[in-house]
Image (tube, rainbow, N blue to C red; front, top):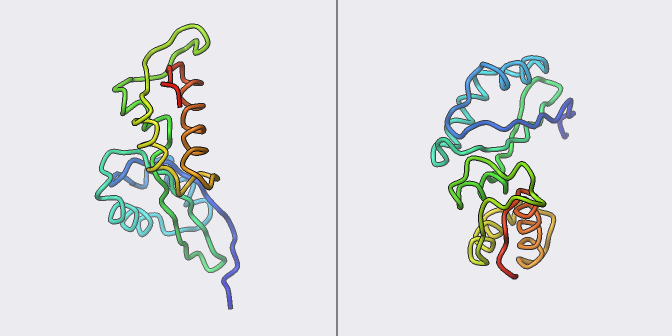
Length: 142
């Protein structure tokens, strides 16, 4: 028989750096989850992504056990890494802070594809390009 789901918790934690301090501790402690067990499992599964932001969706069950899924790094973070930027533009419609090539857009779209709700790489590229434009970054013609 399936376990009863009590809560879904969404967190963004740097890979290999989960610890009981906020935001992890309070979010999990409020649901009665063993915080240290989550931190150990998360850090073990994200050793290859040291320092990168890793969104996690944690499913908490009635018996206080949990499962979690680690997603890929968010698109804006990948764009900033690709262009070596600290942040996007404060005025994206006026001030442009960089330019993204078609190859960079494709690479980011292919990496993020499992987490996006698109069926083709072209539609995923359109989503990545839209995110880039909203950050004040020019995108090469797709």
